[in-house]
Image (cartoon, rainbow, N blue to C red; front, side, top):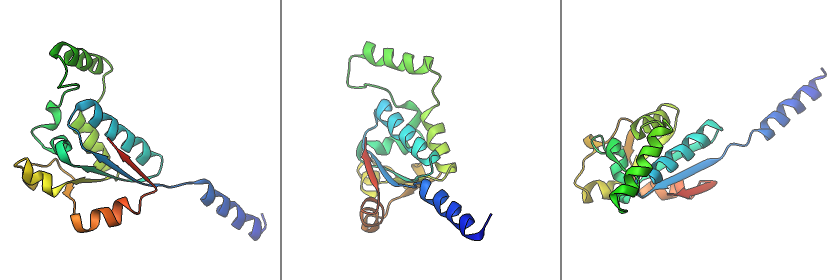
Length: 154
């Protein structure tokens, strides 16, 4: 192959691989929302995107060591409805939220917690699941949200 053709092939390969910078914000502790946020993050990460997932407001419970695996679907609905959804999720043999979060961390996602909500909910950095970092409020929006190609909120 001539050197020029080889350069063009490499150039085309680079152009065909579209890498996105994605910011995902999760403000809920309802398991279905948390699960959707984490599965979306994992899918984007595995497709080659750079992913930062931020947990704020009640979402801070989804990165708390003692609370992550006790989240439920539809907690504000009648108990029967919530239990029925939880049973259907169990029947699908979906991974636990803590395993999903761990997978995100080990596969390269940046996982952040809101420092204000740590204080509001009486938590400390020691309460966070492994790999979760406290976001720096002075740079988070400037360096993550504003630089992202996509901002998704759950």
